[in-house]
Length: 444
Image (cartoon, rainbow, N blue to C red; front, side):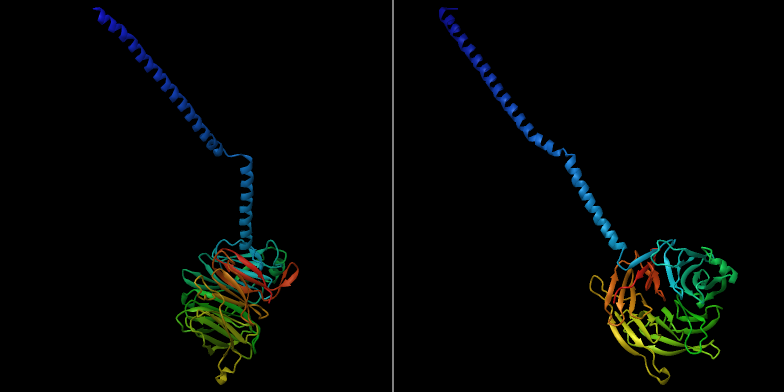
């Protein structure tokens, strides 16, 4: 190597060394820069993540306090709703113990007993010493196998009960009563007095189901005071029975395709029926001089409704009839007329039914029952119960959910019943919800 080459090689070494050193220093600087960047970035991420983590941790004490209050308020609100649902101001008591839907009910003439018919094939006769009692003793009557009771009515005594039932073979009537005088005396010391079947009729009403059964002590004219009972079938026929003996006293026929119901006036003079058409037919029970029933004859017809009459009832004096129709109206008729001189019954009052659906359409009443003093009319539609003034038609009170299902029976106690010691007019309702409820009377 010549001197010039050596000189160039010597000069090249420092240049290379400086280049390598510069690269190393640059790498270190870059490394330091990125190390500081990632350390700061990690710190920022931690700073952001820590509040979220803290936020996700639920403090134990404050939320528990809030949760308790919320639960307490919610429970209290639900409790208040239950109170409103189960305790209408007029709701006095509930008779429980039925094994299935209650199909009918009726009071004894002295109001000391309330009989109920149940789809479990059992008739229960509750003793109503005081309507405010927490529990009620009742007499249990087991019907023959396969009987589905549809209606009940008291005969002559508080323990004499006529039951209508449907079987595979058609409609039947059974009358139960105390065995004898000795058993009756012994029964006073027993919870369940013995009863036996006094009479029965099978396959009545051409095997059609009996839908209503009403009885009363006949006091009109020369009547002897015996209880007469009118049974109404789902067909068109009505039969009048002697309560004690079970004798068939006469028949009537609406000839209106099918019946809705039929009832008998309190004095035992008239039978009236609501059927498929808008007209109501009325028959008179004619009594002989010896007090027995001579015949049942048609005497008048109530015309004025524009659609089928769903239910009717007589006023306590037996001189007026109150009808409810699918035309949305209630009518009060005067039937104390000289029909034998062709004098027609007169419409005294017409009220619009004060019950409407969600669209504003007028509803009809399914059942009616008038108070013993003739001042208050109780009416039902499905599970709704209303009390109306007979004088004005004004709504006195409404229980929109009187029962948890369709109301199947409604009746006023003929006599006041003790309520906490004070005599009170009581209304009873039955339903498919297996309950019978007792209601006190609203103020006029």
